[in-house]
Length: 235
Image 1 (cartoon, one colour):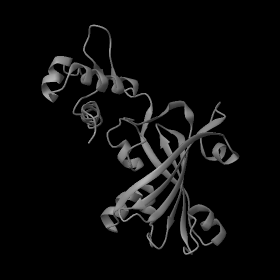
Image 2 (image 1 turned 90 degrees about the vertical axis):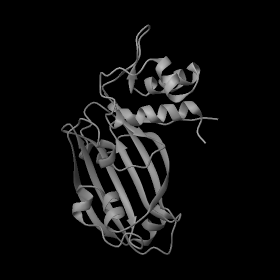
Image 3 (image 1 turned 180 degrees about the horizontal axis):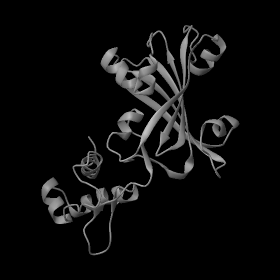
C-alpha cells in the first residue's frame, strides 16, 4: 500500500489534472488538508512538496498553495497512457500526423525489436505529435500482428489504445520504460521542429497485455525544451 503522503499527492494531482482544481485556484490550507485526509502536517507538506517540484502548484511563504499553469508537457513515468489521454485535460491544441504505416516482415529486424523468432509480421507505425503548432514528438511504434491483426489508419490518427481496448477487446497490462538523451539525428530534424536544439529525449518502452504477452515496442523521440518526465519513488 502506498505511503500516506503518496496517497494525498496522487489524489490532489488527479484533481488538478481533471480540473476539479483549476489553474490559479487556491488549495485548502494545510490544516484543512490534515483534517480532510486525517494525516499529519509533515505528510501534507511532503505531498505538496512533490506537487510543487513537478510544477503542479505554486507556493509562497505565508500564503496557501495555488494551482500552477503547466508550462511543461508532463509525462508520468509510472503511468501507461496514450497521447490522447495525456492531453485530455490540457489546454493545448494537438494533432497526430501519420507519416508511415506498413507491415514489416523482415525476420532479422523483428528479432532485433522483440527478441522473438516466432513472429513473422509486425505493424511499423511512425507518427509525429504536434502541440500548439509545433512538431515536437516522433513516435515509432511496432505492434505484433499475432496480437494486433488489424490497425486502421483512423485509429493511428486518433488513439491506438482506445481502438485496441474498446473495439478489439485487448486488455493492456503494463510497460517497461527506459529514458535517455541522444544527439539529434537526420530523421529527428526531418520530422521535428528542432530549431536550435541538438539533443532529443528518447523514451523506449515495451508494452504487455494483462496476460504478460509482449505486443508493442515504442521509441519516442522528444524535443527537449518543454518536456518533464515525472514519477514518485518511495521506500
